[in-house]
Structure formats: structure tokens, C-alpha cells
Image 1 (spheres, rainbow, N blue to C red):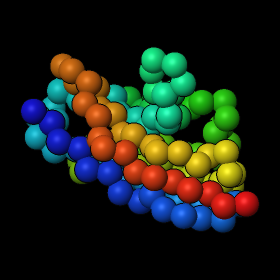
Image 2 (image 1 turned 45 degrees about the horizontal axis):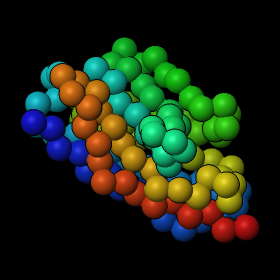
Image 3 (image 1 turned 45 degrees about the vertical axis):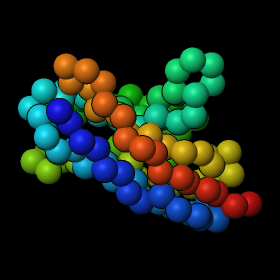
Image 4 (image 1 turned 135 degrees about the horizontal axis):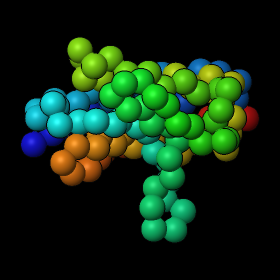
Length: 114
């Protein structure tokens, strides 16, 4: 079993920055990819940024150049550095860990005021 604890959300003005953290515990040796996802438009939550175990990353076009995802394998933690935030970035962000099954965090609210 895998447990996920997210932190770092909050309220920030447009142009500001936030850093989200996602700590994974439990059966972490099976985790090969971790990432942050945004609201579901349709049936699936949208990818914001993901990082695999070797450090390869994927970003949504809307956040490229503004968000950076990183992973500390020793701490089983993934970070999302969010910069140049826009009001349209306002959302609940969910951490996801992919192992033998998919594990989701509870979500952390990010609110960007104009």
C-alpha cells in the first residue's frame, strides 16, 4: 500500500510563486512515475507535470516555462515549483504515484488572485 501526503497550496497573487510537495510512503519501491494533475475536464484529470524514476519529465503546454517538477528519490518526494502564476492556474492540484496501481493524493488548493 502507498500513502500520499501533499502540501504547499495556498493563495498567491498573479505573478507569484508556490511550491507543492508530495511525499509518498509505504510500498514505494514499486513507484515508477509521479506527477501533478489538475481538474478533470471530461473523464480524466489533466496532466500538469510528471516525472519518471530516471528524471524524465512531461509538462502540459500551458505550464511549460513556468512550472518545474523535480523528484527526490531518496525522500520519495516530488515537488512542483510554480512560477509566474496566472489566475487560470487556480485549481485543486492532485499528486499521483504510479506503481502496480495508481495512487492519488487528496489534492491541494492553489488560488491565484488577479
